[in-house]
Length: 91
Image (cartoon, rainbow, N blue to C red; front, top):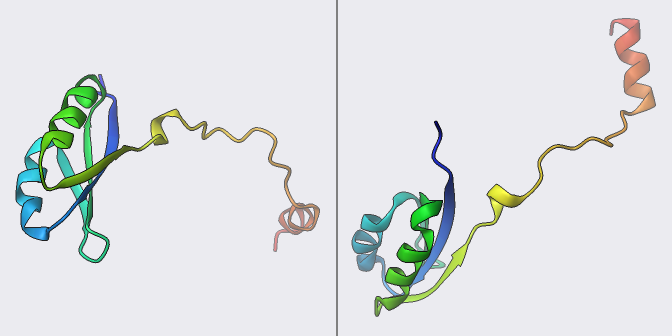
């Protein structure tokens, strides 16, 4: 069974603090210029980890990614008439 995971965007003050941030979840990406990191954590532990990260002195803020809750099934997408005709012709 798949574990449900959710992304956390952690804004920090210095790049040297990144090593400590990596310990809290699965590290995916860090921006040197904007000073943020993207972590993935289990949804059961999300509240606890978010609270732990906010307690750290070098963390400015923590934001959640809402990607797991966005609907990705697009049912009413109408195909282009010109493309339909081209596919029927065998082009």
